[in-house]
Length: 98
Image (cartoon, rainbow, N blue to C red; front, top):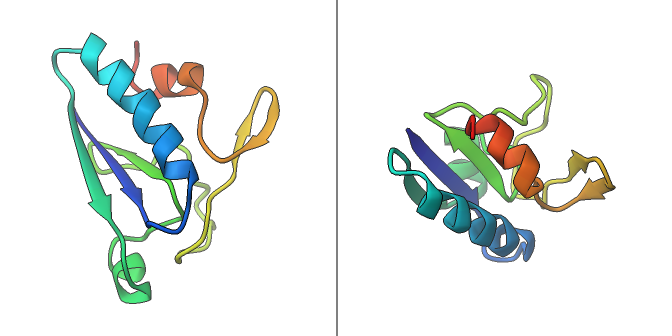
């Protein structure tokens, strides 16, 4: 399984997602963690970037709504504790089937 963390530098939330994914990838032997910097609006369009951080599992964004806007913005995730800048560890475990 390939997990891709897509982000842009001006959004601080990607670092939280990166820490959580790195922790989980240590527990999984069949996961490759990649990071992709999205630097321009054109990159965002090309990669269908739904905001930072975006997490793709084998190329699919399991957290994106079909009508979610594309662009360079910080993303908000709905978590059990309310809106947050990154999915919880439990939400990541669920999409990674841990």
